[in-house]
Length: 62
Image (tube, rainbow, N blue to C red):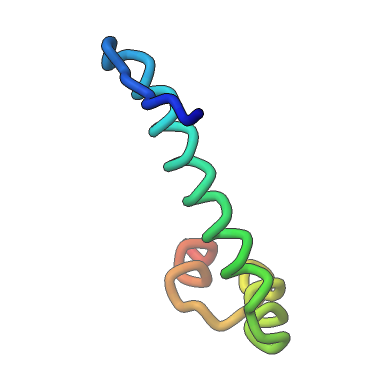
């Protein structure tokens, strides 16, 4: 009834492992992004536009 799966060639397993590993990382990133709090999202949205970073203001003044 059930057949045992035997992989004689290791090259057939590598793409399967690679796919599931990539899918797992992508899923973890999506879940983490969905669980971020609203204030953390707002902070990251405005991060490139915020003034007050001394390294960028000094670079423009030279």
